[in-house]
Image (cartoon, rainbow, N blue to C red):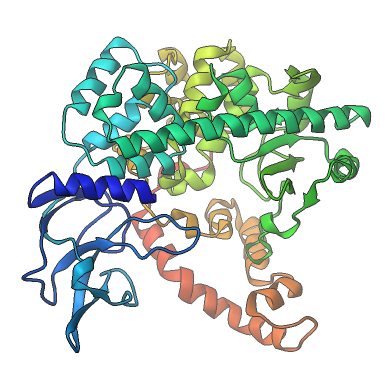
Length: 522
């Protein structure tokens, strides 16, 4: 939580009496308190004992925002005239630094377990779009009349990369008075900061495309910048972290020469995971001390990958796209919708649903609303590329969550016959709540789970267990060449199994994505 949000929350605490509700984010107290649960905090420290769960401000470190911590007291220390409290999360291996009694804001006296979407979750979902109809506006106003945990709502909007949409929609209905001043100020700052970032990125993109054109390099503008310029009514509504362009693989060297001439520096290792067999499909570059990031793609998904989109066909169908005074290319609408669906509802995100952002769902919904989609072509391509399941789930989400105009017959035509309907139950809630922990799973495990046939599984296992010696040396902090590396090769299976074996076994037992893992029929 940002500093001014913490101050706003403290001010709200002071005006709320002795008790206040907070919605939990994170899993540090799991399973006692789960992500999304509401805790009731009673103000005061007079009766804090070992075993109590208390609320206190998170220690501030350079580069990190402030916030609250809800952890359990595990020891009370008498240090002369001062009493210190040692705390620890139930799901954390080590205790926290000691705190004084003056830092304790209160203790948990009641826990309300999360069931379904909370008012904050529903409000965020209603605002995950560029326009709201009358019914949605009425529902948002009703939700604003309730007591809301604005700290949780703000954090959730940032986690889903849509604080600009939240600000835009609340301002559009004149709801500024219902928002705590600190939250409103921060949302406004993020909105205009994103607008300035888009202006900076647009100028940089125009410069890069001009340099590419001078060298005869064709480029397709991808992701955020293409969507902000092509789909969203105002560029500032679409949060972007960098610029993405697609070039042909044979043009990579000349593209890099152009970027180096413009003052970009290459960041070679940041997107290459040699330890788990992940191969890069783009190269990152930075300029202006990191304020401008650009990724040059030569493929749309990392390889090896169970799904792909045929690049020659996409290049042949790409359409003219103007960035300032420069001509470039953009994906044809049906291809764009396929790409967005595969990006949002990827193999990883279907295995571990928390990977799906509301920003990605909004991208698909806005593309459907704005672009003229040839639905027959879309179905034919999805079947030919064997990604009907990804597309079906993406369209299911945007129709159910954002009421995007997806034709019912198209949804029926795409519905896989072997997809377990039970897997879709609660999917909306799982996406919005975004449980933690999925990002720590290496892509190598995803490849192993999705590999078809013994030969492919053995190939993935070889890539996982026999990483390049240089990568092994770097991972274990030894110089290369060194004989120690070969010892680490012997220990590697045991280390990986000890770290990921339990997770893999639990996943297979739960069989959370069994329907998705079945081979698709064309």
